[in-house]
Length: 486
View (tube, rainbow, N blue to C red):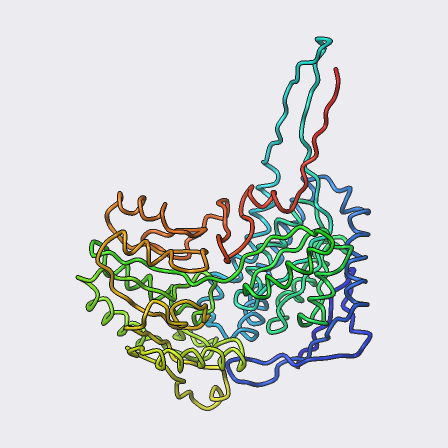
């Protein structure tokens, strides 16, 4: 049984209140750890440690030295790869063949990539004419924003946490991380690696707990925080935005989505089916970029539905360390109840259940886990809740379309705008449709393929701001103009 403490100023510490909560393995329903819940005193200590680090060695450290430390940090994660892999899979239940190729390697790579980006970003300068003819030189300086509150989600705990901590530290900030209460292990384990490679005390801090009247609220309302970055559900983002408004604290949000896939008759059917199986069911559908709405051109509609059905029914659910496992459980029993409520609602709204729609029979040892079947629906009206609301489970609705304009209109008929996947072998159509779909990222004949130098974020209710490559600097630094009269 693991005891998970906060990591504050380079030390693992418990909560003064003595409040604890259970960490549950979602694959089995068994308790695998106890976690300390932070109150205001622990959050104060973490923020104060981060502010002190900004005034100490970290704040004075040359960029090249800071970048070298972040490379060592990435190497330190890789050196303990198996520990991070087991911790991540126990927390989430996801298959090791997914986590070992995406979560852990990307979690480490985020530190190296952003260290290299920051080292190579120029600043601008201008010569200004003055009345005396001597002129003036204007140039810009990037300074770290200060203390960044990082509120990270449970679906890709290490990857999405380091996606924020990596650029924050590369830019010279200090951080206080509040991981999801569902997934505390890898964020805490990273504190050990921070100490091993010599990251100064107070640069990286972790507080555990919940949202309202717990670590999340205390952190987002703290006057010592200079910026808040959050990935998660849109409603939670709205609550954080309200808290940030009191002190005009800067925010960067990546929020929910109800992402469409557009499958045209001229697609490569094998690619489209394989890609949609991944985008709808990978990580048990718990991916913000996943596909829950699939629009298929009518002439290939029946064939596509049948092939996606066969692919979904071939997915194997099982233990994380079984190399044959394709799909793990949902993150918790609470989330399973939410997803199953949508499964019931879909039938009430008139859906034809192509496959799934319930819970699977699991073997002994896994019967207590948060398992649901991969599910495909057809025949829902466009205004059905299951078509309009984010479910965040292994499910999708498939609907036919008859023209390119209709497909674009259907894709954009949503409050969200995070991602889309477009399947066509017509390059002109690919460019045309990608430009017209309201989404922060448009994939063509692929899904989840990411160049970390490119901008990432959502439109409409899917987020505020862009991160990735040099675009991350817009949030994690402040630009100062210096004007020197010659």
